[in-house]
Length: 253
Image 1 (cartoon, helix red, strand yellow):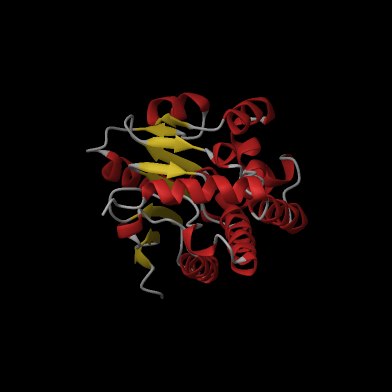
Image 2 (cartoon, rainbow, N blue to C red):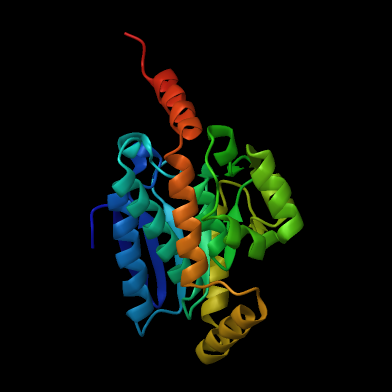
């Protein structure tokens, strides 16, 4: 397992932690690749009953780390396609997946939040999709968000951009559960133990059936989403807005 993620198994409850706290677990290409390998390992683990996805440090996940690939179309495309594959792999796990969201889940991080079957956050967290504010198309997260909160609310959220509080995220359905920040970890573990007590075959069959009932989500849709996002990010509008944002974030000398 990479230093960028850790995977711990405690009696069938697997905890997958993003380990890039200095960057608020922003999704670099290396982190996405490590996460994809870890999800593959979870899918192959016969002892796995529940997955908890969390982030180390002050935030769950601050979204895509585009600073280092702003002018590198190849790596940017690899990141977006990797995130699309990883999100679909989490969605297709036979076991329930819980996102334990503290601090912030932004952009691609909020995408990971809603691809999990359940998500727990606290009232003070920040969740959402500010992509359009940066001239970016949130294509990869859109199919996942539609399936979580419905097409109408997803349309309103993605077009408006910005972020919402954890309380509002729970009201909208981004988060399925809300707990105090102090109790977030213990509440997540309580839910994991409850899920573990269910029948493994019943849970897996229910997940497959629920997937069949939803609008189709497959490799082709996610590939098209990644291609679309990559094309828009490479455009002049996104490049200029991202450069301005990165320049503004540079420390003054």
